[in-house]
Amino acid sequence: MRINRNNILVLFCLLFITFLICMLSPLDIFTFNAASWIDSSVFKYIGWQMAEGQIPYLDMFDHKGLLIYFINYIGYIISPHRGVWFIEFIFMFITVLFAYKIARKFASKPISMLIVLIALAPIYDYFEGGNFTEEYALPFQMIALYIFIDFFKNPYKYMSRGDNYKSKVNFKFFNILVFINGICMGCVLFLRPNMISIWIVFCLMVLIYCILKKYYLELLKFFISFFTGLLIVIIPMIIYLVLNSAFKAFIDDYILFNMMYATDRKISFIMDVFSEFFTTPIIIFSFVVICSKIYLQIKNKENFYFNVGYLIYMFLTVVLISMSGRMYNHYAMTLLPMLIYPISLLFVYFNKIKLKDEFMTMIVVILITVFVAPTWSKLLFNSIVDIVDKDEPYTNRTIEYVKANTDEDDKISVWGNNNVIYNFTKRSSVSKYSYQFSIIAMSEKIEKEYFADLKKNKPKIIVDGQPLDEYPDLAEKWSKFLKDNNYELVFEDSYTVYERKDK
Picture 1 (cartoon, helix red, strand yellow):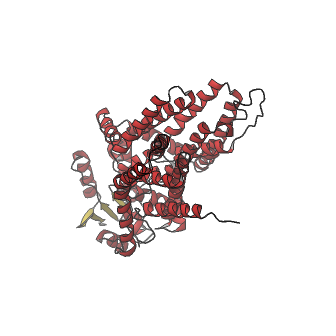
Picture 2: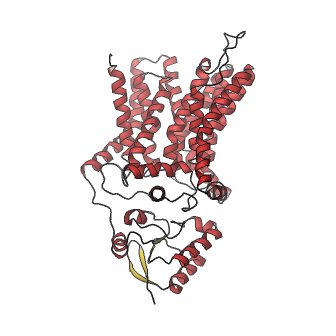
Picture 3: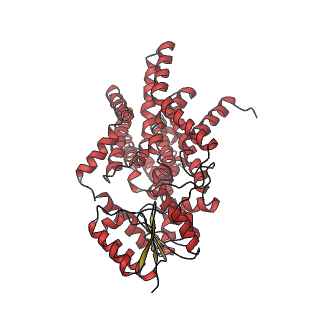
């Protein structure tokens, strides 16, 4: 079998890009035991507890989708510290691969590689340590976008009949690509529900397309294939929750709590976050390109509908990541898939106007200088530093004290949002609320349940990592609880440690 050297080179480049991105993670294979970030530490804690037989939502509170916990559970089984990194690498490689495949529908191999580098450059600021729901949603979003673009470019692959076969229908009930697309949406639904703008918009565009073409049987086929894929994900998740008596807790935590979380902020906060994300130069550029495409091809109805749909998809994506009114950079990872197509269109335009080689070279050099070199050089530098200049193992006085003064079977409590303490001491939480902020400020029920768990289980050690300057009432309750239950200050360092003294 003859090996295509160009394809091997492309594969190597995609793997190298993936490696550079994943080296942003503190869990990379060259670190000994660096601390993961706040949300990542929560997910890793829940994955560890699942390996110990605990059930998400029922035994451990968090308000993300079930899939993120299974990912961290599998990662823990592979390796308690680095296992998640291997899963991140696989997910990120699929993301990079399908970004390239989308670009290849419009450009040559070298230009497609450049498009990938430009579109994924913002991930340097968006990654924030990784192991986020947004990161794991990326491959599913990229695959879905690839399939939807392919659908509108090559409808004959999805339709049992086409414009050349008006008198004959060779109807098949199932389409494997649409089935895969349904699986992708199901997986994202069980990560975080505000990341499904691709499916909301483009499923509607498929509906409009089929109705306008009077492809009613084809629409039925799309529906059957898509929802079969969707149910392939949903049904096992529900069965797992029902069999473990966690379905109600899932509804309370993942749906009801998230509804409260999404409506907790004033509209002014939401507008501020929307403005912050929307006014990024590459986002503005993408909107301008799509709007220009719509204007130039308004007479071509099929392209017109697709590009209008794409514009709506882009706008809805920015709206959905802004809904919480909280400005976290990792939310913006969801924006990355939508950049591939607009950047590709720019090169399609350059090709149509037949730029001279020297002008094309100059444009490519400018794009590399402005968008590619600054970010990817930093990624390369950081990777070299992580590999060569290894940090000392993560440790601090609090972790060492907890390990020295408790047994592994003992449970502790960490006040605040610092699950890294549980992960490094291998001591689990006395309460299902392993962290309390910002959830305790939003729910009086959570506050009551957490304090009830403390009073009932009486942990030997409490680690305080949460300043309460903004919550005077809660600070008073916290101080009173420590005093009434005989907890004495041991020391103050990066955390404050209290130990219960038996009378």
